[in-house]
Image 1: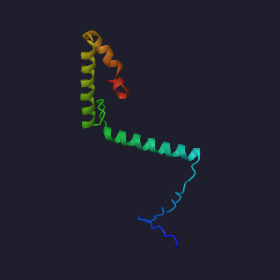
Image 2: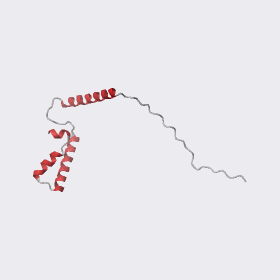
Image 3: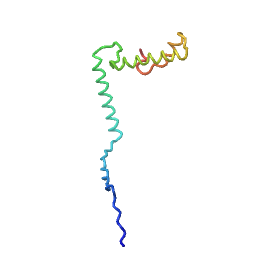
Image 4: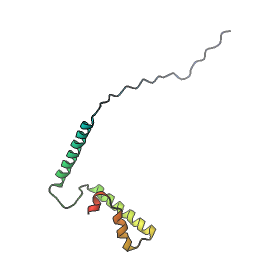
Length: 104
């Protein structure tokens, strides 16, 4: 008697080989030039947004307001949890300022 042949209940699928993504070599000089161009464009855009206004506004709009409110809430929570005295609250909060806020 000939043995019965097993059949598969699920079909065999093959995955196609991934295609190679072409890469481009960039020299350090080219990389520096691209960085310089990006920084120059960003500074030009920042200067264009200022429109001669030297009022120390950041120009970030609503996002900045939301971040400031969140910062106030975090500071109040820390003061409450740590029982921080009023005299020390200013010292502590000024130590948490970052980036542009340091020059306010």
